[in-house]
Image (cartoon, rainbow, N blue to C red; front, side):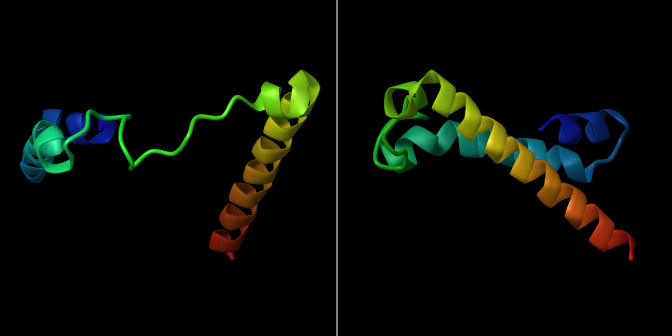
Length: 82
């Protein structure tokens, strides 16, 4: 959303349509789905990782996921350059 606002401020008129579409979608969310954002069947059950794995395990799991994501993005960037 920040990019859309930035480009609109620069004068890109097509981005005003994107802003209006976002506003309409946000306004029609409750009438379409019948639930507020963050509620209802579209969202899964909340998890608290320390309850499942303990504080150390939750921290390690989070770090492993972040490290995996970092290497994945780095691999994609290297692959894009070649």
